[in-house]
Amino acid sequence: MPILELKHLRKYFATQKAVDDISLSIEKGQIFGLLGPNGAGKTTLIRMITGIFYPDEGEIIFDGKKFDPVKDIGKIGYMPEERGLYKKMKIGEQTLYLAQLKGLSKAEATKKIKEWFIKFDMHTWWGKKVEDLSKGMSQKLQFVTTVLHEPKLVILDEPFSGLDPVNTNLIKDEIYNLAQKGATIIFSTHRMEQVEEICDHIALVNKGQKILDGTVKQVKQDFKENLFKVSFADPVPAEHLAIHLFQVIQKKEKEVVIKLDPGFTNNDILQYFMNKGLRIESFNEILPSLNDIFIRLVEGTPTARQFQEINA
Image (cartoon, rainbow, N blue to C red; front, side, top):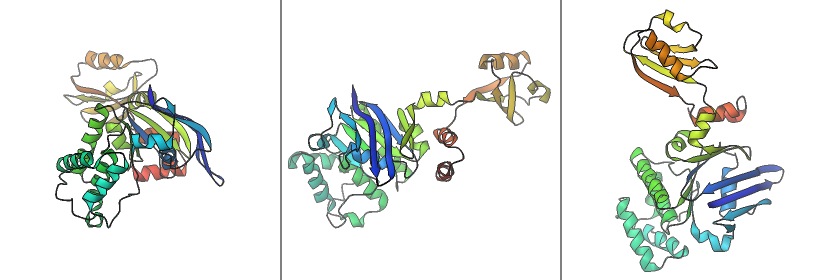
């Protein structure tokens, strides 16, 4: 059973269609990537899922029944892109306060906070104030406050912003751990390379509409262009590359990138090179990145140019 179903959601602000007829189904234990450029409608969609906004049209089904913001919000952990921590409040007191708001007793919350603070090397932070933390340190704290109550659904909006590589990997490991324990993760970002690494399933949105929805593996397969990189033990004579099986896209002394002609398979290529007596060291299909796929879908638009700059 899906943990979350969105059915034809719409949300308007004056004449702007922030979310325009989006439907999604997210399975339990899935790491789901919600992708799109700034202004695509991702944050508005998340705010409807968390009950901050009410949809103008459509329905949200959470854990098998109609979403009730009052009853269900305690089962959700939301880490917004705009940080929501109290800058003047001491970190330990603030984390304890937020945990109790999510239904944990003081004793239970204190125990869990200490465990997370030790795990994230935050055990000396208890008496500090949020305003004393760097952006990356605040990000770690925000993550802890989001997952402390062990929610069924965790929504992370740009969770790696401001983090160094070590702490980025720390958060990634915890995302995997949460999913393995049965939590569902919605990971919202415009950084495509991060999503390719950790997500099972993705949805791409642009200008309030869903333009793509599927597993990362299947999406890449759907948009592949029959490109292959072949490396050889010795230089390749040019005459061996003039053949109707493929087009040469790029050539180095011992390596070529080729595009297979229609009607032929990768086995045909391998057989051809072996018949020529060429020793193949590696043979790999080149699949498009999610960034390449998105650019192709919105090619020629201002959105495409924005994405090329962000993900360059």
